[in-house]
Image 1 (cartoon, rainbow, N blue to C red):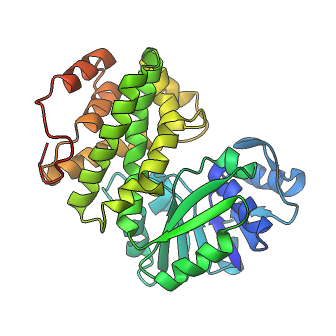
Image 2 (image 1 turned 90 degrees about the vertical axis):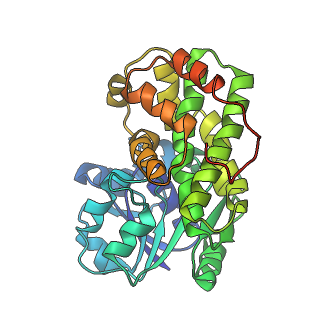
Length: 332
């Protein structure tokens, strides 16, 4: 198959490499001409994926119109805050859209809603799970899930993406997979704050567990199909790796904030986007509409944007009213 990939960051480039190694043709779009040129001439993306050699047959372009002429199968790998404006630059609707991006935009939309508003007739899939780009690029064993309402299309993509180091499972719970990918980044910031305060292992294990509960309640309140989605690769799997990995941008942001750095200073020193920073506000707006309490996410927002001290946020979480552990029907 042929694939046009929107976004030449670490994951977009890694996914392009995976597709080429699986025998597919790929055209990768980079915002900057210089980055596209280096991918084409040096066969490397040293800015986002250093020390990784890319296939010589992988081609890149800085002209988004080239993607339309190359393929009707699009892969989305741009940060959520740029997704709508990026799609508006494409004049011809694709047939298939495979989304790799994770988050909720400022208009409270997931990627599937944004794509549907722009290309209502396109077949949409989302791929998510514990899949940090450097490990996939180095061919380390990785398992993910691909979700679509079109079961036969999901099965087809499953077969052409899977190989000896990349294993793909299927799901029909598109919204559930998207919500997992969005909210886990917010929880990972909280996990990073604990790391910055001194690697509190008991607290971090509790945070991950209660964070998964928070993600699940939120997803079910939004109408996701199955609670089992949150126990799987897109939920528990991605949450664990994002809260613990050295590659996690969201965990890193939290760690630096926990060590006393200002959020804007942390972000100014990063090349890549930490999606949880941009997701937490629309996440809480949606939760408020649902009359749903999101205590961990609320404290992340207060620490990041209202200058609340992490110790105060933790103290407030620990002093909340006592509850039954897994009462999903209970609000709060």
